[in-house]
Length: 419
Ligand SMILES: Cc1cc2nc3c(=O)[nH]c(=O)nc-3n(C[C@H](O)[C@H](O)[C@H](O)COP(=O)(O)OP(=O)(O)OC[C@H]3O[C@@H](n4cnc5c(N)ncnc54)[C@H](O)[C@@H]3O)c2cc1C
Ligand code: SF4
Ligand code: SF4
Image (cartoon, rainbow, N blue to C red):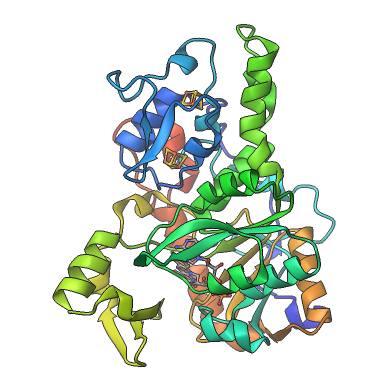
């Protein structure tokens, strides 16, 4: 199997330690001004997930200060009092950004880690699930759902954070921690609007799941890594009682410590629900949302209706409804995940990138147990080219901020002179 999956796409990984340093412990005030007010907040909700003092809530898809309702939007009494700023440590738009974390996440892997232009990786191949129940509902090759089902059946996961359909609201899935293979199979398929899967980690805590598979787009994977690797030492500022430090550390670490495997989804942008679903598809095109089975994006937006009809929207037209927040994201391929999956340039197959030892071993185990059909990436030359192009384009597109702290748009995101 090894020769089947090894790609010649890259060189051995280079250290990124030459990157300029980022501000070590960004504050709540900076997050609210330089991320939320500035317009780069991706709506992941992770700041709300980890807030130890219930100061912020996820309202209209953004963190909102609720503890002192009439106070300034950027005032947190705990941050400015005894000190906290746990929220800002996980924000994917603040430093360290993805590129600064390559050494941290991949520095001690046993396998050879390559730098393929789409982030560090050990193996890249193309795969498809064999289970017909998965193939019926999945997005591309069903690899993601097959991994979740396999992990649950083997006892490796007791929960999976995914986007599950909301029976009350068609085409508007919700973050959920599923605990059965049936639950994850019902959540198969991709929704191209934003679902804050990081918030499902709270359900994992509530359900007492201890080994969770986390599925998310790049800006959802990054905060989980930031929480995992953040040194708790910054919490001890000499102004707090041990019980405060303990509470803040637990709130930061507990959800992240439960993650057994991070499965990243390739992503360049998502669409605004009111714009694409309501204005365009429901009102202009006259398609009731409860008649839609699934969507795909392959050069155009494909709408699969429950009656079998497939309706398309040219990509340029759909992109009128792309969320501007996404254009602050420099990570196309979820570079900090254990395994990244995408459908780029391939129909009914999943382009699969095993990045860490954990990801590589998991995929080998599935393949050895006969659960996946596998092809070498060389059979999908166009997919590899598009993957490289999109990853590069995304690295370079993060706007230079007109104001705010440097880490929101670090200089090493600048296009090289020959771009
Ligand atoms: C918002 C979004 C944008 C994407 N953009 C690209 C792209 O530009 N290029 C590309 O190659 N691939 C993209 N993908 C990935 C692609 O659509 C497939 O998810 C991937 O190929 C895996 O296919 P699969 O059949 O193996 O997954 P499946 O087995 O169908 O599993 C998909 C998993 O994704 C979860 N999910 C569904 N919607 C969301 C959501 N909105 N947010 C977080 N999790 C979700 C599901 O709950 C499920 O667990 C995108 C996915 C999403 C969700
Ligand atoms: S600084 Fe602490 S208490 Fe204040 S919003 Fe952030 S996480 Fe919550
Ligand atoms: S952590 Fe996520 S939701 Fe919170 S400010 Fe940052 S990007 Fe926005």
